[in-house]
Length: 374
Image (cartoon, rainbow, N blue to C red):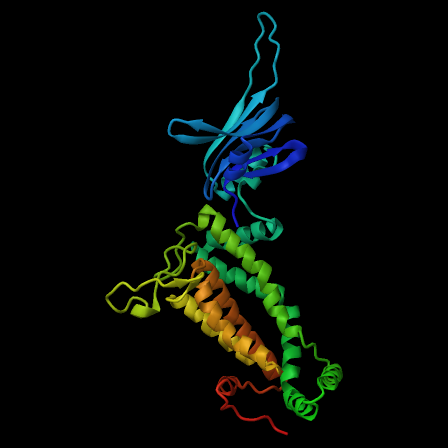
C-alpha cells in the first residue's frame, strides 16, 4: 500500500523506489550521468530530498555501518568541472525536508519545474484516480471545513456519475425479482436435469431481458473508488487527525468505539479482540456499515443456488469485523454509499412495479418467509 525507503527520479530511468531491505542486500545502487530529477528518503508522511540544479551527476543509494548501527544514504556526486584562473563556478542544490503536504509538493513540482516531484507522495498505480479523488475531497473541505462532510459529498457525485449504469443494473435485478416464481417452477420441474434447467433459465432471462450478472456491477464499480479512497486516507498528511463529527477525531484511524461497552455508554474500557485481521469487537460505524450492506443485499433477488445464497447471507457478517480495522473515513464512505444505493434501488423497484419484500426476505433466512406463488 505504501513505499517507505529510498526514492528518486532519474531521467529516462524514471521513478525509482528501493526498500531498505533492497539497499541493505545490494550494499550500493548507483545511477550515472543523470541530469535533472531528484533523490531522497521517504516515509509515510515525511521526506527529505536533494534536487541538483543544472548539472550532470551520479546518484547513489547505499547503506553504511556506523557506531550506533546502520545508516541509509541518498547522495549524488557532480561531474568534475574546470575552473579557469580568476573565474568562478556556482553550483546550487535544493533540499526539501518536511511534511509531504500535497499543495506544497505539487507547488515545487509546478513552480520550480522539478521533474515528477509530485511522485514523492505515493499515489500508487491508480494515480489517475487517487489524486483527482483527493483534489475533489479537498475542494469541498475548503468550503465546509470538514473532510468527513467532503467525503459524503464526493460519494454523492460518484453515485451521480455512475447513475446510468447503476440504474440499468437495478432495473435488471427488478425484472429478475418479478420472474422469481417462474424460476422456482423451472428449478422444481427440472431438478433432476441440471443442464436442461440452466438452458430453460437462460431462455427465461433472454425473454425477460435479464442480465443475471448485472447485480455485480454496483459492487464492481465501488472497488477502484474504494481502493483510491483508502489510499487517500492512508498516505495524505492532510487526512491525519482530520475529525468528522462526534467521536471520530481522526478519519485516517479506525472507529475507536466498541459494542462491548455499548459504544462508550458503559463506564469501562472494552477489550479489542482480533483474529486474523478480523476485529471481533467493532465500533458503531462498522456496525452501521454491516447493517446497510445487509439491507441492500436483502433488496436483491435471492440466488437460486443454496451455496450462493448462504454466501450472500453471511457476507455482511464477515465484512463488519473486517472493515472495523480500516480508516473510519473509508467505513463512513461505504456506509453512506450503501444508504444511497438502498434509496436508489428501492425507487427503481417501485417504478418497475416490484414489491419490496425486505422483511419477508429476512424471515426467509430462517425458513419463515412466504412462499412464492405458483
